[in-house]
Length: 195
Image 1 (cartoon, rainbow, N blue to C red):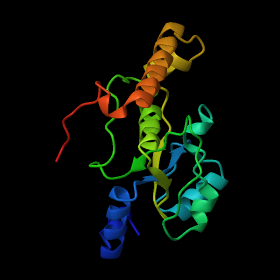
Image 2: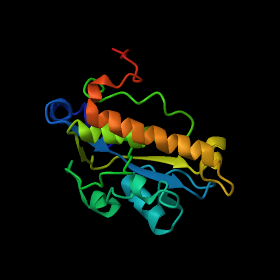
Image 3: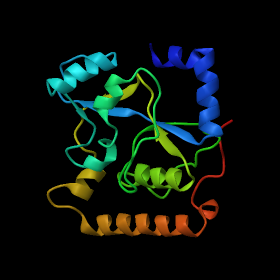
Image 4: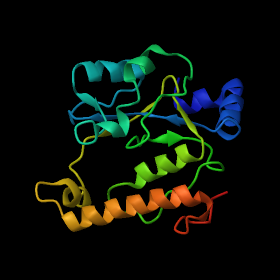
């Protein structure tokens, strides 16, 4: 089933909506990268697993930041035909792409621009608010590999800009301290929500 067809099933839509708002569930998406640029993107999870087996597809960013997406157990996901969770995830570094209720989730911290810590701080905020991570049975995101952005190279390249890295690490620590104090008072998060 394609994503929209799956969510459009009346029994699924009602349950997922309730779980997102009342039970504070978010669905971490299996995040993949296609490294063989000439191949077609896999259309379903069976094709995705074949590509992982032949190494043309990898779990996203595992070669630079293993904690970002690898805690999503791809083998367990492949074997499932129903939503499942909660996932056991590390308290730091895990930053999956998620689906959830935009009415219930916090917005991204606007101080994190360019590259680094935007998804990590958002994930920390989600966990702090008591959300748990779950997986949808057939769904994943995939992108073709692309060279690192200029900011990523500045942060993690062969000659990193240590001042930029220190600033971003300081900002990350500041965010976590502010989150401990009172997450509702984070002054840098936009107050406007789309309807």
